[in-house]
Amino acid sequence: HLLDFSISSVILSFFSATVYLILQKKFRVLPNVAITLILGSLVGQILLNYQYSVTCLQPFHSSYAPISIPHFELSIKHWQVILQTSVALSLLCLIEGLSIGKSLASRCGKRIDSDREAFSFGMGNIGCAFLSGMPASGSLTRSSLNVNSGAKSGVSNLFTGILVLCGYFMLGDLVSYIPVSVLATLVVFIGLSLIKKNQIITSIRSSRSDAITFIVTFLVGLIFSLQLAILIGVLTSLLLFLKKVAEPEMIEHGYNEKGELTRISNAAKGKEPEVSIVHVEGELFFAAADLFYEQIRRVGENRNIKVLILKLLNAHHLDGTSVLALEELLDYYREKNCNVLLCEVRKDAIRILRDSGVLGRINRKNIFPHIQSNPTLSTAKAIKRAKFLLSHNEARVTIYANELNPTRSV
Image (cartoon, rainbow, N blue to C red):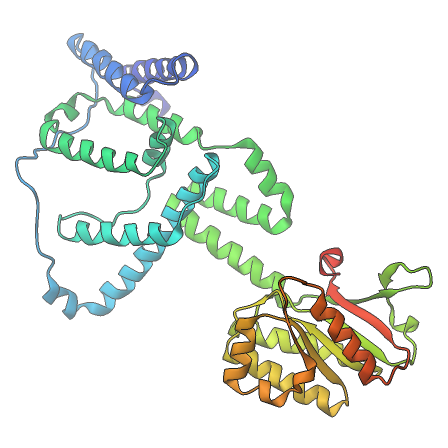
């Protein structure tokens, strides 16, 4: 429909873009969006006087407050449909609002409180239910406009809400003077201000999964809607993450004759007794319990292993499933005549092991709590205990780490 363009819309868009760019470059401290909107509306009225066709916003009448009580009887009758829709909308509002908030907070060098943001979304939507409003979430353009106008704290949202409420009751008829083309031009410029070249380059070059997530989210947002793009982007990131952690590779490191830490091949392994140290890192909740069990069990496939030391300092969120997996590992290594030592065990992990009864099945001499004042003391005691269990025989000490980042684990 290139031939169906409106000359008045082109003039207003070009004028609004010129004014906005000049104000942004020369007078950034001024409310540039409001000034551009007022000047564009004045030019729109001039074009109307010269018989040009200018499409403006529809006015609204605000002589009453649309306060209403939700139909609870209807909600109970169709609770299945309403529940599914409500859950989907709640998830979408949280994802959209938090992502926009974190993006704007990073620009200002600040962090947002996700719990407070989620609470505010919930309270806002409860108010919308009694005011005939639609489900509310974070707005990309309006939030960016607020930040670009110089907002420094959340108090700006309070003043914005008060001004919007006053404008709703006092300025409803004046909306009809705002040309749609002027407002559309400003929305485009506000959206373009959110594009950060450095962040895009970082996202694409960081890893393949980040690049795929970025491209998929960008294409879906370009073809469909922002809401669908955010949802598809989150699902893509989640699937790629699950693929990454589905088969983590653990490799064996040891010291060679030169005292250098290198990877040990199966051919280089001798027949001397072995002490293996495994750094257990990450979330040990129910979804990772099977993976934790399989990886630690694979360490025991080496017939020479006599002592296994598990470092649990960076293992978080132990639950019943992971404790049961640890209990099965203890039985597995007991059958192999291998001693299992737990070192760098935090207080919360000791409490969980004690309450679950697993602690009673382990020799108290084989458990070494984490000491904050001396972080390495727990591991040193565990190694000393391992030497005692080997009756002072010489043994090869190996360290298991992740292949993608062995330096950090070592």
